[in-house]
Length: 418
Image (cartoon, rainbow, N blue to C red):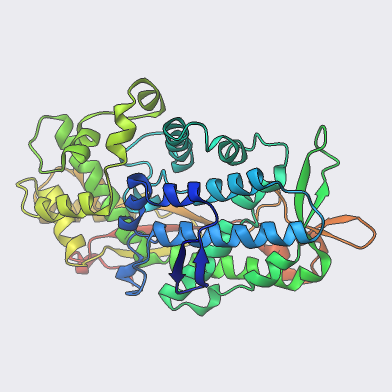
């Protein structure tokens, strides 16, 4: 048995030779070079952990969850357990460089889950069908729906791992959850609203306070880490650098880039393109954070003032100033900032969209319309956590919170908002 040492859980056992073969595969090893939290290390210096760490941790929790459910009398075959481990191990393998930040910058209309499924299809073919059950679980096509919920749901092992892991590496203690207790309280019941014998994942009623803490931790981690205003500003800068680079490349401007990255700069890549040209997937899987930052560092000296300024400010951590409020920012204020940028850089107003940015961010810790978290009581009845909790804060968490940001270069100090 192969064991790995993890700073969160201690020793992690690799449960099957097929899993070890997947871990050793170059496409999975690539996750070592994709940061879990993108540019959050510009705010939290310790946040340098990777998708590789997270995938292994989630796999470990999947093993614990399956052990708990088996101990409670639920029949889960060895093949299904292997499939669940494969599904969670590979659930993020479709992430591109800097994870969610560039998810729609390099490709259009294709999420990382879709690319993960394409990668799993390719690996399944390469490994003679060994991933078939894992693929069925990942796509929610397996009869045991609860296995898919463990991979992708509102109380899945993915979230359990990343909350504790991100909390550990950022030092933000508010993200710590009682993952062990939640896993011990997992249960499976027949779903009365589903056809056939579909079953679903629920939680024993005595876990209510652990679930409340889980949801509160998720809300706090979004505001303090994932949607931290400086992180949002830095991620917007990286997105704008890629957007400008793609515009220049499409006009025939010569840009430094690795061969794989250059292809995604000059070609329009969408869902149909992946289906029509299988070499696109293989080139996508050559990309990691190093391709992007290597290019960004060279683009600092590019003659285009838009691209070079954004890249120089990002590399030297002159992140955009950013302010949040509960309503959209006035168009007059946005236009004022754009005019100031145009005067400062001597560029057309149209190009100032790269420097003055306004959009909304949404914090939705719990969405009862999507795979609800339900408590099962001793009489067999089920209640949604938002209804069962006497904590008014949990009921509030079931409603999304929207904020609008306005970001602009910090070298426009004269235009700073008080």
